Length: 208
Image (cartoon, rainbow, N blue to C red; front, side, top):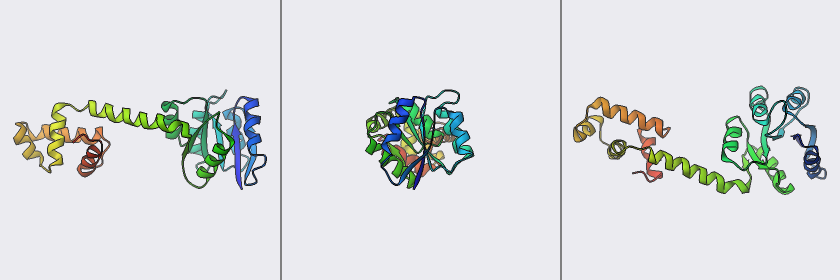
Protein backbone atom coordinates (compact mmCIF):
# COMPACT_ATOMS: atom_id res chain seq x y z
CA UNK A 1 0.00 0.00 0.00
CA UNK A 2 1.31 3.44 -0.97
CA UNK A 3 0.43 6.07 1.64
CA UNK A 4 -0.11 9.39 -0.12
CA UNK A 5 -0.38 12.95 1.13
CA UNK A 6 -1.77 15.48 -1.37
CA UNK A 7 -1.05 19.18 -0.85
CA UNK A 8 -2.67 21.95 -2.89
CA UNK A 9 -4.16 25.27 -1.85
CA UNK A 10 -7.06 25.05 -4.32
CA UNK A 11 -9.74 22.90 -2.69
CA UNK A 12 -11.59 22.10 -5.93
CA UNK A 13 -8.39 20.80 -7.52
CA UNK A 14 -7.45 19.01 -4.33
CA UNK A 15 -10.82 17.22 -4.25
CA UNK A 16 -10.47 16.36 -7.93
CA UNK A 17 -7.04 14.81 -7.50
CA UNK A 18 -8.21 12.86 -4.45
CA UNK A 19 -11.02 11.38 -6.54
CA UNK A 20 -8.40 9.92 -8.93
CA UNK A 21 -7.34 7.46 -6.22
CA UNK A 22 -10.72 6.56 -4.72
CA UNK A 23 -10.89 3.26 -6.61
CA UNK A 24 -7.15 2.50 -6.65
CA UNK A 25 -6.63 -0.26 -4.08
CA UNK A 26 -2.86 0.10 -3.68
CA UNK A 27 -2.84 3.90 -3.18
CA UNK A 28 -4.33 5.29 0.03
CA UNK A 29 -4.74 9.07 0.43
CA UNK A 30 -3.98 9.28 4.15
CA UNK A 31 -4.05 13.09 4.39
CA UNK A 32 -4.56 16.35 2.49
CA UNK A 33 -3.17 19.82 3.16
CA UNK A 34 -3.57 23.32 1.78
CA UNK A 35 -0.25 24.82 2.85
CA UNK A 36 3.30 23.76 3.57
CA UNK A 37 3.15 24.17 7.33
CA UNK A 38 0.23 21.76 7.57
CA UNK A 39 2.17 19.28 5.40
CA UNK A 40 5.09 19.31 7.84
CA UNK A 41 2.77 18.98 10.85
CA UNK A 42 1.08 15.96 9.27
CA UNK A 43 4.41 14.28 8.48
CA UNK A 44 5.36 14.53 12.15
CA UNK A 45 2.25 12.54 13.07
CA UNK A 46 1.41 10.19 10.21
CA UNK A 47 3.33 7.60 8.20
CA UNK A 48 3.50 8.81 4.61
CA UNK A 49 5.36 7.33 1.64
CA UNK A 50 4.84 10.02 -0.99
CA UNK A 51 3.84 13.68 -0.94
CA UNK A 52 2.19 15.09 -4.05
CA UNK A 53 3.20 18.70 -3.47
CA UNK A 54 1.89 21.89 -5.05
CA UNK A 55 4.69 24.42 -5.63
CA UNK A 56 2.69 27.58 -4.91
CA UNK A 57 1.05 27.44 -1.51
CA UNK A 58 0.49 30.05 1.23
CA UNK A 59 2.52 30.27 4.46
CA UNK A 60 5.22 27.89 3.25
CA UNK A 61 5.60 27.30 -0.48
CA UNK A 62 6.28 23.96 -2.12
CA UNK A 63 9.96 24.62 -2.74
CA UNK A 64 10.70 25.35 0.92
CA UNK A 65 8.41 22.53 2.03
CA UNK A 66 10.24 20.08 -0.24
CA UNK A 67 13.56 21.26 1.20
CA UNK A 68 12.28 20.70 4.74
CA UNK A 69 10.90 17.24 3.92
CA UNK A 70 14.23 16.15 2.41
CA UNK A 71 16.03 17.29 5.56
CA UNK A 72 13.61 16.07 8.25
CA UNK A 73 12.00 13.09 6.52
CA UNK A 74 14.52 11.76 3.95
CA UNK A 75 12.62 8.50 3.48
CA UNK A 76 9.52 10.34 2.24
CA UNK A 77 9.48 10.97 -1.52
CA UNK A 78 8.15 14.16 -3.07
CA UNK A 79 6.51 14.63 -6.46
CA UNK A 80 6.10 18.28 -7.42
CA UNK A 81 2.75 19.39 -8.74
CA UNK A 82 2.55 22.64 -10.69
CA UNK A 83 0.88 24.63 -13.42
CA UNK A 84 4.29 25.94 -14.46
CA UNK A 85 5.93 24.31 -17.44
CA UNK A 86 9.31 25.90 -16.81
CA UNK A 87 12.74 24.29 -16.53
CA UNK A 88 13.70 26.61 -13.65
CA UNK A 89 10.93 25.18 -11.44
CA UNK A 90 11.86 21.61 -12.36
CA UNK A 91 15.50 22.32 -11.48
CA UNK A 92 14.68 23.93 -8.14
CA UNK A 93 12.39 21.14 -6.99
CA UNK A 94 14.83 18.46 -8.15
CA UNK A 95 17.69 20.25 -6.37
CA UNK A 96 15.70 20.10 -3.13
CA UNK A 97 15.02 16.39 -3.44
CA UNK A 98 11.83 15.99 -5.51
CA UNK A 99 11.74 12.68 -7.37
CA UNK A 100 9.16 13.75 -9.92
CA UNK A 101 7.39 16.72 -11.50
CA UNK A 102 3.82 16.69 -12.78
CA UNK A 103 1.58 19.36 -14.28
CA UNK A 104 -1.81 20.01 -12.74
CA UNK A 105 -3.69 19.04 -15.88
CA UNK A 106 -2.24 15.52 -15.94
CA UNK A 107 -4.55 12.57 -16.46
CA UNK A 108 -5.32 10.25 -13.57
CA UNK A 109 -3.36 7.47 -15.27
CA UNK A 110 -0.22 9.59 -15.50
CA UNK A 111 -0.41 10.62 -11.86
CA UNK A 112 -0.84 7.00 -10.82
CA UNK A 113 2.09 5.95 -13.00
CA UNK A 114 4.27 8.69 -11.49
CA UNK A 115 3.42 7.66 -7.94
CA UNK A 116 4.12 3.98 -8.65
CA UNK A 117 7.42 4.79 -10.39
CA UNK A 118 8.70 7.04 -7.60
CA UNK A 119 7.56 4.62 -4.90
CA UNK A 120 9.60 1.89 -6.62
CA UNK A 121 12.75 4.02 -6.48
CA UNK A 122 12.58 5.74 -9.85
CA UNK A 123 12.05 9.32 -10.99
CA UNK A 124 9.16 10.56 -13.10
CA UNK A 125 8.66 13.72 -15.12
CA UNK A 126 5.56 14.63 -17.08
CA UNK A 127 5.77 13.61 -20.74
CA UNK A 128 4.77 17.22 -21.47
CA UNK A 129 8.11 18.36 -20.04
CA UNK A 130 10.42 16.07 -21.99
CA UNK A 131 10.85 18.47 -24.91
CA UNK A 132 11.43 21.37 -22.52
CA UNK A 133 14.06 19.46 -20.56
CA UNK A 134 15.92 18.36 -23.69
CA UNK A 135 15.90 21.93 -25.01
CA UNK A 136 17.19 23.23 -21.68
CA UNK A 137 20.05 20.71 -21.60
CA UNK A 138 20.95 21.68 -25.15
CA UNK A 139 20.97 25.37 -24.23
CA UNK A 140 23.26 24.70 -21.26
CA UNK A 141 25.66 22.79 -23.49
CA UNK A 142 25.58 25.57 -26.08
CA UNK A 143 26.42 28.14 -23.41
CA UNK A 144 29.35 26.02 -22.27
CA UNK A 145 30.52 25.70 -25.85
CA UNK A 146 30.19 29.43 -26.45
CA UNK A 147 32.14 30.17 -23.28
CA UNK A 148 35.17 28.28 -24.56
CA UNK A 149 37.82 30.78 -25.54
CA UNK A 150 40.01 30.13 -28.57
CA UNK A 151 42.95 29.34 -26.27
CA UNK A 152 40.87 26.98 -24.12
CA UNK A 153 39.79 25.11 -27.23
CA UNK A 154 43.43 24.77 -28.35
CA UNK A 155 44.47 23.48 -24.93
CA UNK A 156 41.47 21.13 -24.82
CA UNK A 157 42.34 19.61 -28.18
CA UNK A 158 45.95 19.04 -27.11
CA UNK A 159 44.83 17.51 -23.81
CA UNK A 160 42.66 15.12 -25.83
CA UNK A 161 45.74 14.14 -27.84
CA UNK A 162 47.40 13.13 -24.58
CA UNK A 163 49.99 15.90 -24.48
CA UNK A 164 51.50 16.93 -21.15
CA UNK A 165 51.32 20.46 -19.79
CA UNK A 166 54.97 20.90 -20.69
CA UNK A 167 54.45 19.83 -24.31
CA UNK A 168 51.36 22.04 -24.69
CA UNK A 169 53.24 25.00 -23.19
CA UNK A 170 56.09 24.53 -25.66
CA UNK A 171 53.78 24.30 -28.69
CA UNK A 172 51.73 27.34 -27.70
CA UNK A 173 54.73 29.28 -26.42
CA UNK A 174 53.16 29.73 -23.00
CA UNK A 175 54.27 28.96 -19.46
CA UNK A 176 53.49 25.62 -17.83
CA UNK A 177 51.69 27.55 -15.10
CA UNK A 178 49.33 29.09 -17.69
CA UNK A 179 48.54 25.70 -19.22
CA UNK A 180 47.92 24.23 -15.78
CA UNK A 181 45.46 27.06 -15.08
CA UNK A 182 43.64 26.38 -18.36
CA UNK A 183 43.42 22.68 -17.53
CA UNK A 184 41.99 23.37 -14.06
CA UNK A 185 39.48 25.88 -15.45
CA UNK A 186 38.30 23.36 -18.05
CA UNK A 187 37.76 20.72 -15.37
CA UNK A 188 35.65 23.18 -13.39
CA UNK A 189 33.72 24.42 -16.44
CA UNK A 190 32.63 20.92 -17.43
CA UNK A 191 32.35 19.60 -13.86
CA UNK A 192 34.85 16.84 -14.67
CA UNK A 193 36.67 14.91 -11.95
CA UNK A 194 39.79 14.31 -14.02
CA UNK A 195 41.31 14.72 -17.48
CA UNK A 196 39.85 11.46 -18.80
CA UNK A 197 36.33 12.55 -17.84
CA UNK A 198 36.96 16.01 -19.33
CA UNK A 199 37.91 14.48 -22.67
CA UNK A 200 34.92 12.11 -22.58
CA UNK A 201 32.42 14.90 -21.83
CA UNK A 202 33.74 17.29 -24.46
CA UNK A 203 33.91 14.57 -27.10
CA UNK A 204 30.30 13.58 -26.39
CA UNK A 205 29.28 17.21 -26.87
CA UNK A 206 31.17 17.50 -30.11
CA UNK A 207 33.58 20.13 -28.86
CA UNK A 208 36.67 18.24 -29.98
